[in-house]
Length: 144
Image 1: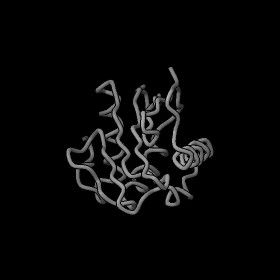
Image 2: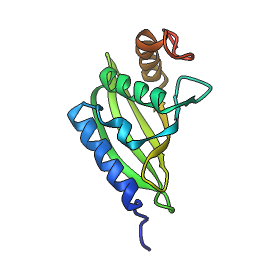
Image 3: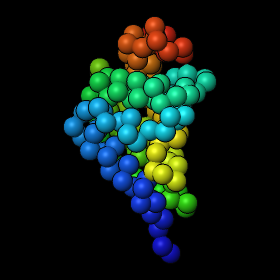
């Protein structure tokens, strides 16, 4: 059985993503995000729909997470989606999560969904993101 691999354009974008995260500098993020990209937050019921929202959320969460690290990667059969398992801390709360990223045929991120556990880690993240972005994005009110 052959394991699926990412489409070469998606793989190039994912490599850029990992390099930016490692540097803790997402200045070049717009280059790999589709203009109509969607971000599905673990805190908000409705997705955020625009490259501007996606980049704002990802840049902010990178400053909130401490000791962030990716651990495992899973690729979809079509080679256009990846699941990245991660761990991080927010204050004194540890959390684990997954990033579910879907790319288009050009290798641009079109959908970025985040799932996080345990609940107290998610609450800590929501409170911190709300404090930083609640005035800009609905659904990120301080305290969740």
